[in-house]
Image (tube, rainbow, N blue to C red; front, side, top):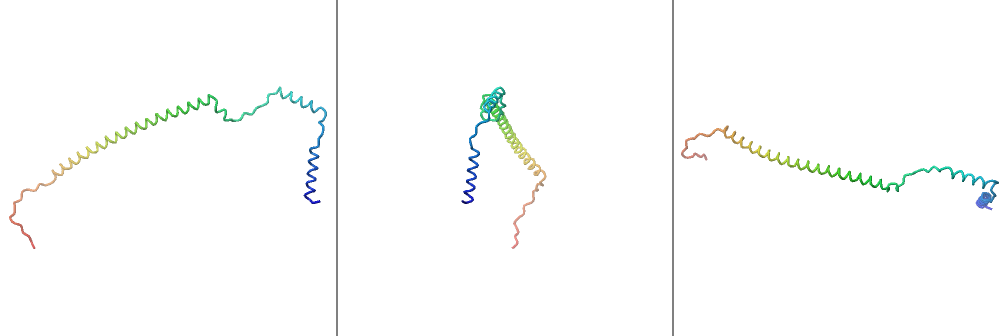
Length: 135
């Protein structure tokens, strides 16, 4: 016989011994029935765990709906305010650009007048007859 067969034989023997039918000790049935009766009177402590089914209660759905609605209203108001501020900013920019153009044209006009005043006027010079050219 090989070592492997010997090990299998020991394992079979251990299983037969472990699974051997034995009668219950005297009074076993009475003790089990007494314990069951005691447990019927005592409320078992139930451990509550989180479940996704709890999320579908009506009050949770209404609370979620209310929260989403409030967020949408606040977001809409904020977006409208941002658009109004941007439009006001664009209008102010256009007014500033117009004012700068007007101021620039006025400055050009004033500069031209100052230059006209500061520039010496050539006095009338006598006209010369003939022109000399060197070659």
